[in-house]
Amino acid sequence: MIDIHRFKTDLIALGLLAVTVFLGLSLFSYDPADPPAQLVYPVRDVAQNLCGTSGAHIAHLLRSGFGIGAWGIFLALIVVDMRMFSRQQAASVMVELFGLALILISICIVSQMMLGQNSATPLIGSGGYIGALGFSVLESKFSVAGSLILLASMFFAGLLLTADTLPVRILFSCLTFPFKALSREAVEVDEETEEEYEEEEEVVAEDEEEEYEEEVVAAPKLKKAKKRKPIKVNPPAGLRLTRQSQPVEKKKNSSYKLPGLELLEEAENFPFELLAKKAEEAAEILENTFADFGLDIQVSEIDTGPVLTLFELDLKPGLRVAKVTALAHDLAVALRVPSVRVVPSIPGKNTVGVEVPNEKQVMVRLRELIEACSDEAEHSRIPLFMGKDVSGHPLTADLSKLPHLLIAGRTGTGKSVCLNTLILSLLMTRTPNEVKMLMIDPKM
Image 1 (cartoon, one colour):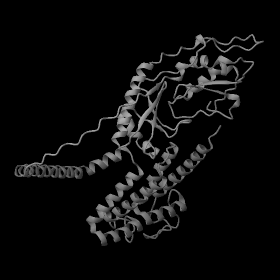
Image 2 (cartoon, one colour):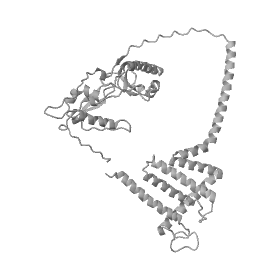
Image 3 (cartoon, one colour):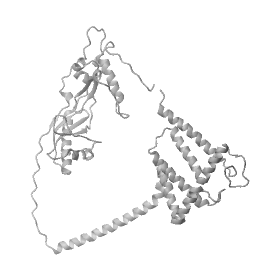
Image 4 (cartoon, one colour):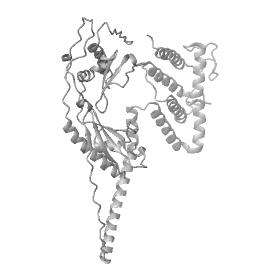
């Protein structure tokens, strides 16, 4: 099937390529003697431009308006066309157009300043009308040196906005290196001065201590730390399930034999004791981290799972959940994990949850799900075994009762594994007479 969006982009790119080639040939074969220009004498009756009368008119307008900068427009069209053919998406079209405008204006004015009247049109100059107008304004306000500084800033700003690539950044860093070195030297001088000032303050403070007698004040008595209540650590739900060693029974009056569960790998042993110990240590870290930010929050219960551990928090009356959510990054740093997720409310409880990834994650196997949920599969028309939730409870569904099933996610998050699991769910529990499946791959 044709992608309409890509097809339109390719058509526009082809049209822009034709315009670019036409413009390049017109500028390349530009001659001031061609009509409608009247810059030299004698004037030709017929234009000798490679693109005919139209090319001569366009080249005359561009050279009159932009001077040498007309070639900048030609190069900009080449870059845009190459991007469209390679299907590169611009971060912001308006920003890039603004950057191109800055580059074009700076080139026109610099051409007017440096080359002056070195062109076929002495009244306009090498920068065209844009360069002549810009140079007259800048020269009257900033003189030549100030104008060059301003134009260089405009050019490099436009370059960064238009082509924010590694070579451009390296060039920009090389140009700004002397200024960074000077600023570092100034900071070092300031630090040395500050250190000398601090040493003088210490000497004055010691002299004052000798002159005055210190008043001895009894230190306030420290309150004894509250004893931590024992936290209830719940094992994964999978450990509490009664497993069956037999697959789902086949339907009566059917000669088809379902595949045996011995074809699938057995579930791994769950290290609950080790995980419970680490979960208690993590709970203490959570409470200490909250205390560092002035929050009195206690962990009341812990639910362990194969991939995540859920810590339930008891919040004092009047404490907003937003304060806990705002500390998600700080909690991740304290626990030394990539990220944590704050669950604002847990169904059926008045606690707030914090989901923390386990240091050692246990693989969830399809075999243990089929063994644990064989009764549910028996009463479902199209059973699907999709995995486990945070607490380790099996996740199953009946496809016939679902309005739709969408599997989405970025690359590497397990979409193909999930699809394979759903297909195996059908193969292990249903016969060909009960379910027929049609697979369509639109990319083929």
